[in-house]
Image (cartoon, rainbow over all chains, first blue to last red; front, top):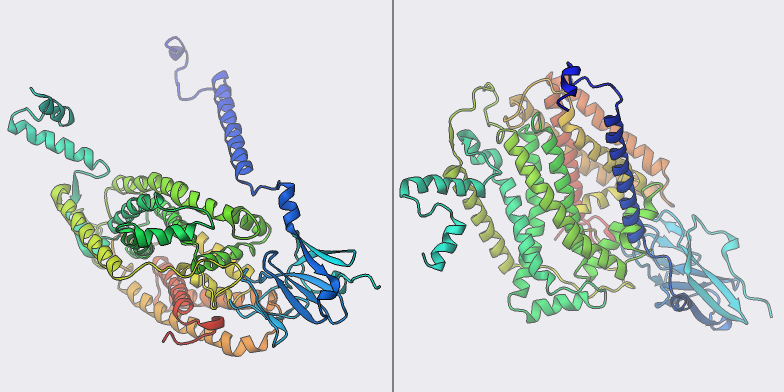
Length: 176
Length: 449
């Protein structure tokens, strides 16, 4: 150090790249890499856990019951599964999420008026989950329905967002 | 020397010296206590009508919250099936349990109000110009931390009020384009409120945010000292002259601060003895109460949501406002107004007009939307008709008001920007007030009585 100073008359004006500045840059780079790793670890650690035990998976499949127990044109609430099973007039089924698509309130089925009315901001949905009255921006979410041996099951793990009702979303029981 | 004397000397070195030297030692000890402060302060900044003691009050409330929060932490259990019962147990069986919770509750709500008033005070006395620019930014970050602390604490009692307020507030995140769903699921730890949500909120409320506050608050105070204390208050036509006489911080500033702190403590204590913190029925995910409202400080946003498409009311408009606030200290101002309330006499007249215009325009807008436009538009909200169109109308209204006021009063940009700030802040306050008190069953407009 002491030897170098006389050679460099203006010590502030070091050459643009020297061994020292390269090393400094490497340290900074290493620091950035370490920071990125740290952030990655924190994010991975805090991410909503995706693996669920198979027991939880089985619990997510709700056995609703034999197809014939549901009359056409009615809506049945499943509190444990947090969904409504709607049977349309033509015999088809829809499993509707009970969360309003506006801000997530639970929508009760008002049988008298034949529609879902959200208590929070009075959005209204018909039996197919289609929006009748805003502010809800889209139709109620759907769960997947499986009909095995005439017994209806709903997989509450698979929630599907949709913008509006289409005929393809209905599940029909096999004609017997 | 006996053992007690030796211990005393180890704590207060120099206490055995003659009285004359002791005085200096005591001064040293005091300045250690107060090393965020200068030894002397300009006498004029002691005037109560400069700060209204708001910054000090906020700091007192934060420490009150730390204290009561620590006590609550020993009693509270952050699990959905036990949280509510632990609060009930706290209130019914623990001596002073209800009082401690009340103090925590009222201090938290008080802190929001005080911090907001402090923010207004700093803005209206122009205390954001250089060298205080970056302290304004730190203040905004602190304010965000306070809001988040309140929000995460709101859920913890796990009653109906908490559960549904957090449900709808966190559902608002979903409307942020692109990352909304991801953000919501990260905050809640799943698609809906559950055990992960409560443990996330508990960790953030009792560790992350307090640590952040403890780190940033001293930074905020230290920057005041680096800026040579507070802005010097002066009258509109007074020059930026000399600082005036300086007086010792001890006792002149300290006794004032202690007085404000004691009065505040007394007020909080009286309120906490008279009014209990709310606790409704235990959370029931199957039953939404009617109406369901967000925490009161988010009611302005919820009210805005009734009138704009979510992408605008929850994303674009808040983003623009927050961006504007961060820009405030970095705009090039034409004149030096630090220390003058509302810039100038002209600024005061313009401020009054802005407040009145804003109240009239906001109330008219809400009524028109509720009774005229609302009945015309049906079906799911459309991003053009219920988003872009009203947004452009409001934006055009604000811009033309700004230009009109600037021309009419021949104002400097300090005054014009202050006028715009008042217009927006008043509108937000009106929205909040209507949301809190004038919305009833089914979120319909009604009188509060």
